[in-house]
Length: 217
Image (cartoon, rainbow, N blue to C red; front, side):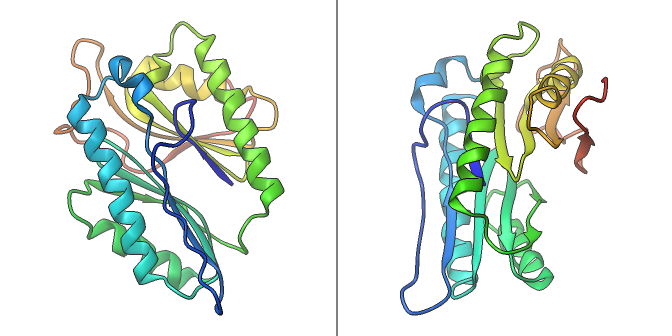
């Protein structure tokens, strides 16, 4: 289970392994500065998202200390996505509550699953899969690929960003066609082409919308 955010190495990460107790690893991923110029978010908003990710990751580290979990935190326009594994439903709910109460968080999509932490091999495969989806986006002219974040967990692709409805549909369709992708979850803020999404706009899709591989959009 890996986070693929943009298509370059993470600029910030938080990882903690506690000696003498069950392992706990919580990571925050931030976009690199190489794509700031083409991201639809302002530079300030991008930095705010990076700060928010690290803050939420730190708060989850404190709240869930001592549990056998692996949680990833991603943020786009103050929308927080939680992915990874926790051992119980109660811990999943607790993680979502902690994230929702964090400063400046607009909405939380809690996609944690109740399961044992993924293996290194599974995370490596997810990393590779996310890279392939990114490459497919780069080669699709209808997608403003630098305005879409890709998060990959257990062969599920989560798409975040500020896009038009057409871009959202094309991105989901392209991602679903990549070999190895089991499911695509859209977590976009959508607006009309003449009115690009802004942080103040409420997302048009609150609950995740899923498409399965090979399903025409």
